[in-house]
Image (cartoon, rainbow, N blue to C red):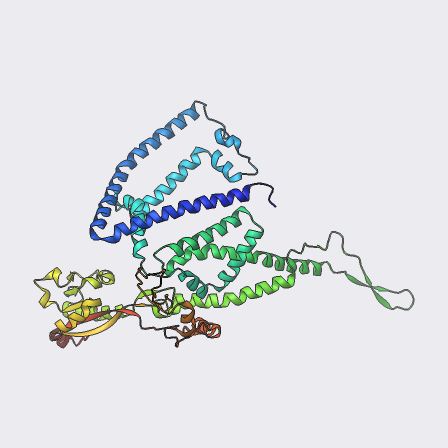
Amino acid sequence: MPTTWAPVLLLIYFGILGIIAKIFFGKLKELSIFITSNTANTRTADVFVANLKDVTIRTLPWLGILLAVVIGILLFREFKGYAQSDRHGLALRIDRRKQPVLDTILTMPWTHWFFALVCSWFLFVILFTVLFTNLPGGIGDGIWQGLYYWLQQQQVARGGQPWYYYFLLIPLYEQIGVVFGLAGIIRCLVRPTRFRLFLVFWFVGNVFIYTWAGEKMPWLMIHMTMPMMILAAVALEPAVLALVQAVKTRMQASAAQPITAEKSSDADGVTTPVEDPVPAGIVVPTPRRRTPLAVSVATIALAVVLLIPTLQNMFQVTFVHSADGPHEMMIYVQTSTDINTMMDKIDTLDKKLYKGDHQIPIGLVDDATWPFAWYLRDYKNVCYNFPDGCSTTAQNIPVIISSGDKMVNMQYQYRNGYQFHQYHMRTQWDQGYMPPACKPTATDHCTDPQAYVGVGPWLWLSYGDNPPPGAKFDLGRAVNNVWSWWWQRKAFGDTNGSYDMGLFIKNDVTSETNVTP
């Protein structure tokens, strides 16, 4: 039983904090819905945030002046010998030994706080102003625009991933981290230190936040896997130390073995071995056995076994399938390598018609602006928002890039004057793991829109996108499918998910250059 009220007070603290969090996040959701509900509200919010940036930028110089005045007063007091001791005010009530963190915060010299502020502000300014090329707009964006963006995206929920998304994604890639990370949590709670409790808070807190957040993307898993890997190291620490100590003990014991010498008998000439005592100064250690050696060896062997698929997955996603969305869940959606094929054709046309000066006129519909705004950055005659962006010359554009819904209509519109070929602009990982279509009940009227619909994670792991009628989760099939994906990258479901684009080349240009879409 606890000897203090600390556990009870801790539960009360989290109870109160939970109520506050529910109210706070509820207000955030209401604000996000208001901002994104219609264009008028979005414009109002844009104006408000822009004004907030202006006020911030106007206020910062005054804050700088105020800081300079405070620093000047502190320096003057120290110059006159009025400097206070490091323990005054609230610091007098802090126990140095039992509350070292609070003691450090309350007794830290003001110079430490000042230079920490200067260094952090310098890094902030140099990065958000893009090496001082976007002053003062970058400062306002750095402070407010990121928060505003996430406030908008929370309701948009880009990607539309379910709450269990990361519980499916992370185990597919991080086997050693998942198994020993969970073991690390147990060890941190059973044998707590401040750092170990911080690791648990860091990991569990991030899992909660990113599972709750509306925008779930695979690259955000780094915020969960980083503390998870450190927790895994905490779990492996006893086994590693025990094994190292066992090796050291064996080596020291070998070095301290009795030295055998031959000594002749007096009459018969027969020699008999005599054991000399252990040389002086050599002591055979008797280490404390914190973890049994057999358990340590088994633990490390398990870690090595789990490390193998972890390294395999790392190799596959980094070097083999680095731009292959349909075969890598961590990639999710990726610009296709078909982009390179299209750009090679455009470069060839430009070389044949304009000597490679990047002068060929190109029509780019708005749906294809990204990523072609980057790939066409060197071309000087790009008509963005085609055909409205160049209505007077649109009929004579030799090359047109289209995508999305407009591509189908343009195929019919330009069928006589242009040759056409369809490519993948972006490919994506199959999303059959999404929840099944909502079925209305007395308590759930299915009012929330479902951006994507699947068969659910368990059936998807077992059967892919098309489970047989009445199918249930099959552990054997799921293990086999995961195994096949680990080592052969055999997809769980469909690999044809894509967002397509089209290349149009005028007939006379094709005839002149022999370059076809």
